[in-house]
Length: 173
Image 1 (tube, one colour):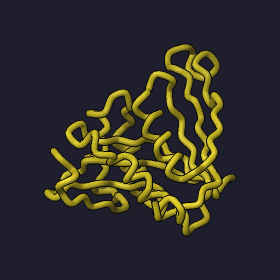
Image 2 (cartoon, rainbow, N blue to C red; image 1 turned 120 degrees about the vertical axis):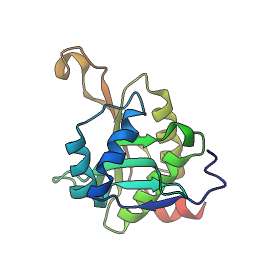
Image 3 (cartoon, rainbow, N blue to C red; image 1 turned 60 degrees about the horizontal axis):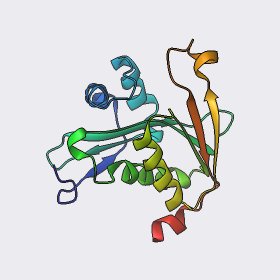
């Protein structure tokens, strides 16, 4: 699938997208698969801070879930970025991130956070490109340590915090 030649539609997800999100994430290791119920909640209750991407046939080919921490409304925490394997290599992840940042910058979001495991080089590279496009300084720290939070059964989750960013500059370039 060459997403450069097709029209991709971005929109807020809704609860009818929950099963499609669940199935997409199952095809996107190393992402953690949540319950379908969790994906339904993401698509419904967190639709304003999430984005879904569809190909010209209406198939979901990308999804980002996120939320605004209640004590830090100026921050968007990006939970997961999923891109259909057949749509990879087309910068769809970055396009969805920019779509979401553009939508939320009007609501006062100035910082974007995510966690990435040290071995997930693809996500590290994608977020590095995105943060560079925003001309945003980035801070890194371990948010959840393997031994302290996962009983050693999961890698560290490293927090990336970027901002404040100026979206108008990024969109113009």
